Image 1 (cartoon, rainbow, N blue to C red):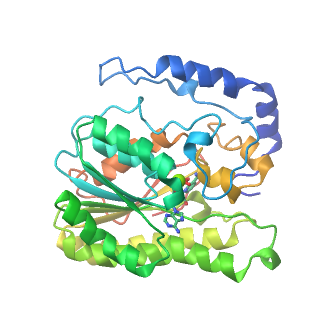
Image 2: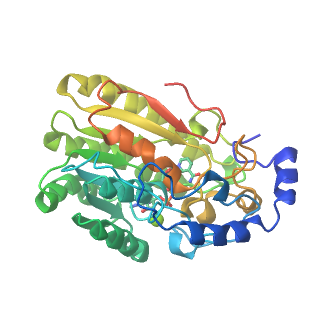
Length: 333
Ligand code: NAD
Ligand code: MG
């Protein structure tokens, strides 16, 4: 059983919910308006779309703006409280999915935001730029390929040049393609997964260190697959475990410098990663159905976690692993 495999229970729940995705899609559109009261969420949990989701496939890396239902990254539904005022953040894969939810929430909390993404994701990046700038924050875009060592190593300095400093680094970009078995896992795919998920994190963190001051925060996106590796995600799961070890070691190394390093382990979240080769189609349709919550999470549901980890007030938490799993087991810290 993999974390995303539909179980009999999940399939039955999915069958009962047929048509719910479309219906709830309309519900969000009607409820996404801010009511101006920060104590009241603009969106009720019950409104988040449930499986079955419509079958869909996009060529990698995929675009959030072409997904059905459209993922909720907090464009309307996240409300900030100035927790990151004056901070500057760099988020890899900040164009879509979890990285975009972090980018939007950081801006709404008062931070200036730089994102790294692939050039073909420019349409999604433009959507992020619009929301960040609507908050009156500065936005910096760095399209490029994180497998390119000189591009990646140059990012922190470019962020400091454009934004003035670097206080929050979110190592979030990833490559995930499912394969039926080890025989189908090519050297090219293995290399791409390792370069994107591990080398880039290593290069970027090392290049960022000279710019990070006490109070800075590094947040690494791992996954629940680090606890139980799905048989169709061999290379990807290897990297998600390694990210936890990197987090652990770096937290110990940087504690005396006042820099915190933590990891987030999302469960199944509704993002382009999954519909662009990350999952089998049957898993996409029933995505998240086998979690206790019974649905895929929306990117915005992770935003409060990334904000908390970025917030210097969370000063005693480093080397920790924080879950957003819909109730499924997650790796221990
Ligand atoms: P996503 O597709 O929205 O984000 C991944 C991003 O990685 C892309 O937007 C892209 O910009 C970036 N990327 C990939 N290869 C790149 C390269 N060579 N150069 C530059 N950028 C590159 O999907 P997401 O689900 O939001 O993924 C964000 C993180 O969340 C990843 O680390 C992923 O492993 C993790 N995660 C996701 C899920 C899930 O169910 N969606 C579950 C657990 C963990
Ligand atoms: Mg993307």
